[in-house]
Length: 357
Image (cartoon, rainbow, N blue to C red; front, side):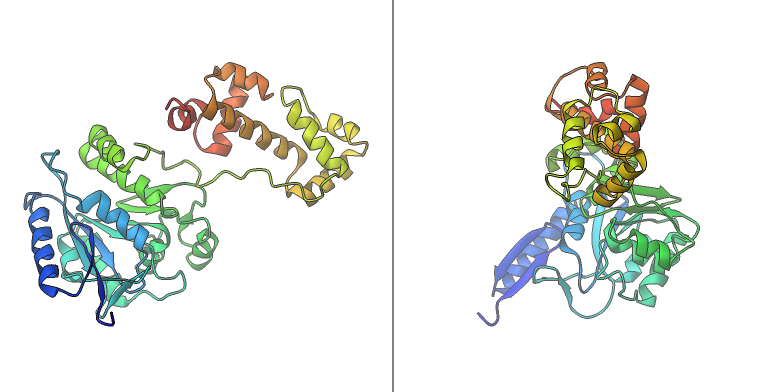
């Protein structure tokens, strides 16, 4: 078994385990034939590959843009471009063989940069120069997750807005203060440069680009094959903070929180909270900050939005009734608070995540 090799054949996304190099060559030939389904003048999508490649993010590029789609009259050409010499070892013990180098980027319509091998890993100058040259010639450039650090190192995000995985947003903002970093959204588009949040947000970004190029119906068809929502707005939050488990079980504050959760439809001003907890408003605020990291009223708002999200997902209750039972006070307050925390209005949330969606 010492000579066993694992080879990822890029263009038809076959994963093989074999000692027969002739078989590998045959699969390469079949793969090349599949890639010729797209006409020669179709836009070229190039996905970068490099040592330490993030496999999932790279797979997103392959699945969205490399997979032949004969149901569409016009589709993309696709190529994997090696960003550096030497072996390309991807996460999971996979070795990638790519035939094209950075010179091909001059012909690209879209360049995809998967997650980089590390937020602190230096970016080769040759890669930066190739991306700068391609962008100057009109190419669109998109990063997934930590791939944003490649774009930043190349100077392609200077003066622009961008996002990345929430784990890296603070580091990106500190290292590149000339970039406006949005830590909440799924993806950002700014002057032909696209950046997405964590791994799965790369699917949302890719579908967004397909929608721009081919229209909503084509993007919806691709999404159906992937079994993912056809569209999630770029402005939707990466994640929604939920109330943390109570730090001190059995405390008076825990009893107050349980009482509020059971009567969300009632009015709960600060004075009533303090009176119910038999303490002063100042002491209550301090204890909330210690145990939840938030103010009492912000905690209450999040509880109401969380309950509303559950009802939107699991019931057909009218929006007006959800607003009442969760204690928002008015339909406008419901829409405003829900959108602020969830990134989309209640009706759109139900369309995407409801049981009948």
